[in-house]
Image (cartoon, rainbow, N blue to C red):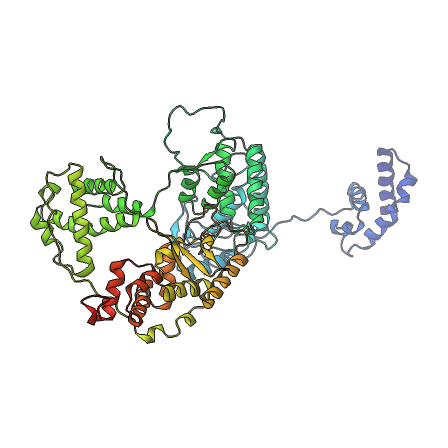
Length: 631
C-alpha cells in the first residue's frame, strides 16, 4: 500500500510539473485523500480501481482517473454494447424476421428499443382505422402497402405536417426524418388522430410563424387599377376561376384602410364580425388584386363569392355602394332570368329562338316599341307554352311556321279550367308577337276562342278559420294573417308595403296600385296593436335597418339596397297556417258580399273592380242573377 501510494504520489507531482502548478496546489484539492478512498474501495481480488468508482467524484474524477491511469491502477472501461431486442412476432410484409428493421416499428420506423412489432401510437392507429372500415393500400409517397386514412399513412401525415410549413426553408422533399418512439418525442405522439393532419402544438405555432413571414414577404398585385388610366373600350368580365386564395397579394394603404373601415362599419351595425369573416375575406382579396382607388365592378365581387363557399359578396356590395366605390351592374330580374333559362331548354332551336323573340316583345324590346309586361307575366307565359312546344317537336314539327289553326285548337284539349285558359292566352300572345316580328307569315291563333267555366268564389269551412291567429306567435306572421283575413290584401300588396304607408295616428293603411288610384284601408284597434308589435320587434332586432319596406326578413333588413321580401315568404307564412292567402282573401270578400249584397260597398272596402264585385255578389246571392241591384 505504501509502495502504491508513493508511486501514485510521484504521478501527481509529475502532473503538477506538466501543468506548471505547485504540488501543494494539487494537494489542496484533496486528490490524495480521494485516491486513498478509491484504492480502499477495491474488491479484495482486484488490483485496479474500476472506472465507475470515479463517477461520484464530480470535477475531481477526470484528474484522478488520469493519475491512476498513468500509475497503472485504473481498470479499463467495459464496452457499452446494447443487445438488440428480440421481436415478438414476424414482420407484416415478409412473414420473417427483418434484421434491418430490428428494434424499429414496422409502420413508422421509429426506434423504441423494445420487443414490440408496432409502437403504441401505430397500434392505436391501426385499431382505429380497422374499426372504421379502412383497408391496406399502396401510398404513392412511400410506396408501402399499409393502412391509409384520408389517402395517407400515419408516418407520412406526421412528416408532412412537420415539414409542409418550415420557416427555416428546410422542408424535405422525398425524404423522411427518423425519431424515437417515446412519449416525450413530439413527432411520435403527434398525429394520433387519423381524421386530419395534426394542427396543435408546435405545428400550429410553425403555421402562425409561416403566415407572419409570408405576410411580410407579400408583394403588391400586378393588376392594380390606376385611376388615371381611362377606359379605351369595354373589357370582358374578369376570370376569377383560377383565383388563389391561399397567397393573396399585399394590401395598399388605401385598401387596408378600406378593410378596417368595413370591419368598423359591421361592428357599428351590431353584427358579429366572426360570423361575417367571409365578407371581410372577400373584400380583402378583391381590393388586394384590384386596389381601392377606382370603383370596383359588382361582377368582380359576386364572381369570386359564387366560386368559393368561404367567400360572401352581398354585404361587400352594399358597403361599397354606400362608400361610392361600386360600379353597379345592370339589375336582372329573377323572373326574366328563369324565363330565358326555360326558353334555352327547348329541344329544337327554332322554337327556342321563337321563345326568346317572344320574351323580347313582352319586355318592350321588339322591333316595334310596346308596353312592357310584368316579369312574372313573362315567366308565366313561357312556362305555359313549354309543354306544348315540346309536344309539337315530338310530333315532327320543327318550325313555328308549320303550326296551323288545328294545332292551336287541339293544344288545350287535355287541360281544363284555369290551365286551359292560361295556355290559350299564352299561345295567342306568342303567335301574335311572332307575326309582328315577321317570323311567321300568318297568325294561326287568331280567331281561336276557348269556352271554359270559371269557378265562382266560395267560402272556407268555419272549422279551418277558428283560432287562426292562435296558430302563430310571431308578430310578423300574425299581422300578415290579419291583413289578409280581415282586409283581403293580396300577397303582392303585402310585399310592396312601405313603412310610410302606415299612418298609426289616423289608423290608415295606403295600398299603392300601379296604373290605378291608391286604395285606403282603415284599420281597427286590434290590427293596429299587431302593427305596433311588429314595429317594436323590427326595431329591437334591426335598430338601424334602412330598408323602406314594411315587412322585412333577416336578409332584407340588413341589405342597404332595400329589396322587398319575396313571394315565398308570404307563402311560407300561410303554409304554417294551413291555408292559401288567395283562398283566405276570397273567403273574406265572399263573407262581406253575403251579408250585404251591394257591389259598391265591396269596391269601397276592398278596392275591387266593378266586374269582380258583381261576381262576388252573384256568387253569394244566386237569386239576383238578373242584376245585383234587382229587387
